Image 1 (cartoon, rainbow, N blue to C red):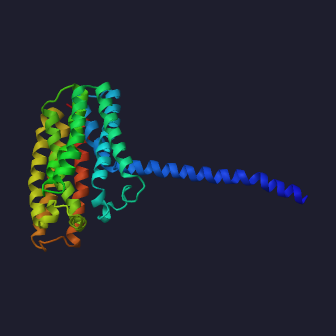
Image 2: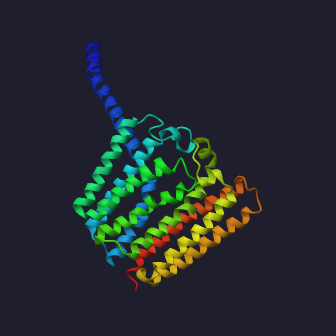
Amino acid sequence: MVLSQVSAVNVRQPVSTAAVDGTAQLSGVRATIGAYVALCKPRIVELLLITAVPTLFLAYGGLPSLLVTVVVVLGGALAAGSANALNCYIDRDIDEIMRRTSSRPLVRHEVSPRAALIFGLVLAVVSVTLFAVTTNLLAAGLTLAAILYYVVIYTILLKRHTSQSTLWGGACGAAPVVIAWAAATGSLSWPAWLLFGVVFFWQPPHFWALAIKYRDDYRRAGIPMLPVVASVRRVLAESVVYSWLMVAVSIAVWPWAGPLYGAVALLAGGVFLYEVHRLFRSSGRTRTDGADGAEMLATMRLFHLSILYLTLVFAAVAAGVFIR
């Protein structure tokens, strides 16, 4: 009886060890995949869905081609992921300094710098090739230009050297609009450039509102963006200017997007302008060298309102084509 029990234990033991090893390997694979996904900054990729897909509705004047929609979403996500991964590779030194970015995969040594570089380059090649093969060379060229602009112009040349990096870097965030239009039509026209302008002018008030909260992080990392080198009041003053430009350009889309879009653009724009003006006026009654707790809460409210604004305006772009 004793011998049989010992034998049973000996037989079962390798199975138990194999199961543990298999679970550990599966967890390791999941962690690795999660690290590479994190390199792509998936929350930033959401901007693609908010702006590019509705643009397709306007470009087609109705329901867009399913194939083109899939290519725009998949190819755009790969292109954005490529730019973000390469950005993580270049900025790994400052990401280590900032609390907000200290959990990124390269900082935590979950991915090696060489692997991140190769990963970003492979995604770039795949995304550009996908657009070239399935849509047209214009869309592919714009995709390549957007990746290069974000990596070379914004990350390397602007981010560490000028306070206006957010403004000029905004061209990358607005690129999905013109890429989507080019993929659908093979050309670019006024509505595409106007929608590009909406996103371009949207980004300074959107990101500066967030950067005010993390200005100490950026200062510690030596990033001279406007909220780091200027007073909160000056940042909000410039946010007012770009907010007016954003709303003006969005209203200019009205003739192509229809009356429903026009109503939404006017209402959403009015609410946003009221909020940014209110925040600017209140900043004159508080300290001007930095943001106190109340100002931080207010700027974060503007940050979230900006996301809602962009979502509503581009949802109206898609819906407006069905109501003429």
